Length: 125
Image (cartoon, rainbow, N blue to C red; front, side, top):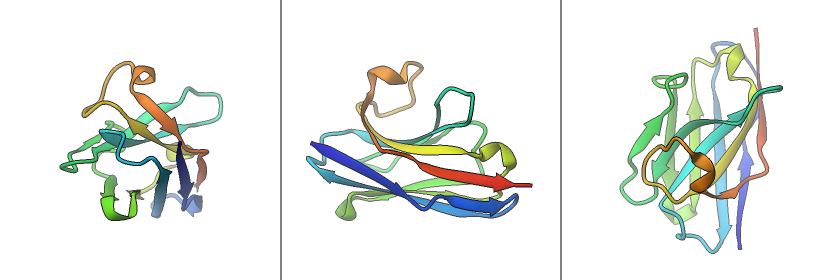
């Protein structure tokens, strides 16, 4: 059984920064990648960024490219999301996930193996 716990969310002003953490426990190393997703009120959950567990290849969605940085520490089974230049539209619950895929896909539901419980990020104007 794999458990994912996200921390690091909070309230920040537009233009500010936050760093999210996702720690995995249990039967780790079953996945090929890990990723961050987010869900704003009234909207569907959307892909934010992902990183391959071996090699550390990073992928970003267009809305966050150049502002967010995904990274990982295999020894600590932890993934990070450094969020800079935050915008009001970044407000959402952020979830981490383990993934079967090595690269972004159109149909995420086929690739997601485990979800975390989510952490709230609120960006005020």
